[in-house]
Image 1 (cartoon, one colour):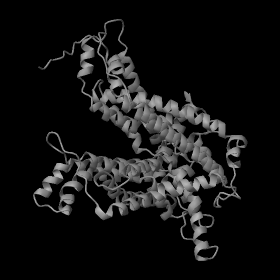
Image 2 (image 1 turned 60 degrees about the vertical axis):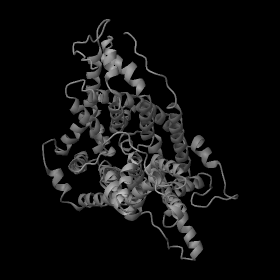
Image 3 (image 1 turned 135 degrees about the vertical axis):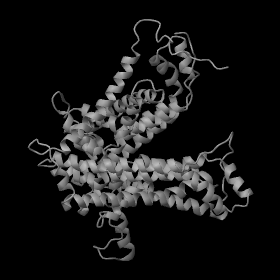
Image 4 (image 1 turned 180 degrees about the horizontal axis):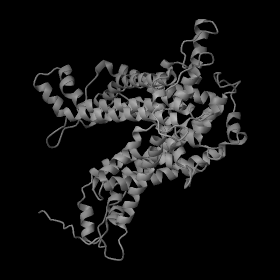
Amino acid sequence: MTIAISEQVPRTVHGFDYTRVVLYGFALALVLLIVLPMSWLVYYAFSSPSGGITLSNFTRLFSESTFIDPLITTFVLATSTSVICCIVAAPMGWLVARTDMPLRRTTRLMVTASFVTPPFLGAIAWELLAAPNSGLINQAYRVLTGAPADDHLFNIYSFAGLTFVIACYTFPYVFVLVANALDRTPGDLEDASSILGGSAWDTARRVTIPLAMPAVLAGALVAFLQAMTLFGSPAILALPAGFHTMTTKIWSLFQYPPKPELAAAAALPLLILTVLLLRAEHMILGRRGYAVLGGKNSDPRIVPLGVLRWPAVLLCFGILLCPVFLPYGALFNAAFSRIASQVISINNFTFHNIYFVFFELSATKLAFYNTFVLGIATATLGTILALVISYLTTRQAVAGHRVLGFLATAPVAIPGIVLGVGLFLSYTRPPFVLYGTLWILLLAFLTLSLPAAYQQMQSAFRSIHPELEDASRILGATRLRALREITAPLLRTSVIATWCFVFVGTIRELSAAIMLFTSETKVISVLIFDLNESGDLAAISVLGIIMLIITFGIVALANRLRIGGGPVRLRNY
């Protein structure tokens, strides 16, 4: 029986209904969060130092080699990284999701470890491993082969080295998308292909690959965007090698004397390129989409590997050597060695590096305090904001909900360092002078974390039918109360996962923080970057290990909190 719910349902029984005020307040906060810094970016991109409107910034950008070279380098770097990630992660995702390879769960956990490792920390770890002179791998190579002291096997300070390191910490995006897509692919389609005489290759080419192709394309796009917008790894590896990417070039334009007009103009090509790529992906997937139709589907078909089972394990763990085992080993070695570039032994083992970080390094306590305050505040406010905005868009609760959805996802197209520039230009002048406070960092972290949080919450909302909300409103609840007491408890798992994701993203964020910090608002990521410039790799290793322990602890705690929960009960409001 179908019950028609009248639009004239009373919105409240007692007193004034604050629902619209609160919902529109969240919408206004979102508009200010995104539009204000981006407006200042566009304004400065077309401004001259004297204050007039000009196109000279773009003329310089596309005519001087000091700007053209970083543009080309960034494009080649992002393309190379995307291709490498797809070549490595797609087969690995298939092995984990669709074969009887041993240790598949362990492999997924190790990929998660590489995912939560900050790329700039991975770059520093590979400095310890593959610096031409002091790298542990190059030292071992010279000892084993008797090569001259100036010879080396790997040089991490090169374009190839930078591409390799970025790919190490970007391929998990592709892996997760491909593995999840294959997990959801029913095995009866492949069984039908085999029954009709299709070979294993024909089945893969006509069934499995087409079903996984949207995930591969999405992963390639994510990898491209990640490589294009990263700041930490290029700043650590590219600048010593003598070349710039666009993010490091924008950062250099804010060194003395600052050139905010050129920095803003340099940010727009990255934004435009990202928008074009997103549109191209939509057109490709819209033209040829794949969906599974029907009722209950069978479980995914597991492909037996036979004698190749353990070689497949060795292949996966060989890949994981690069983002997990070798870098973590290098950080641990440096943290407990008197000299970071020497292999740890009984003679040079020490706890002094830990003592130095906590008792002699004056900036440590403040950096930890700032990081935790910002992490908790950003995760809490970001999850609440994403929850309300995704409710407004999926339930179409306010006019202009499509605009809100666009604004919530727009920051994904903006490099963190560019957003930092926009926030710097927005909040260093009246009426909102926030520079030098934690508030401006909170705004930056909220903005950067919003797209991922919004996408997760929107996906969760779409899985919940609105009939429970409708029933609660029939009983007299407002939209806001129905959201708080009916829908939000049903979304408990997604809310916790989103909180965890935002917290982890906040404590590892460097790109925006490097533009907005002061001596009193320094966070752990900025402290690590500063220590790298001074060459204190032992202290960096201690801080990096602590950051990883905190990250894994938060993830483990979130997984425990996701277990349990009681039923939602409707009551008369």
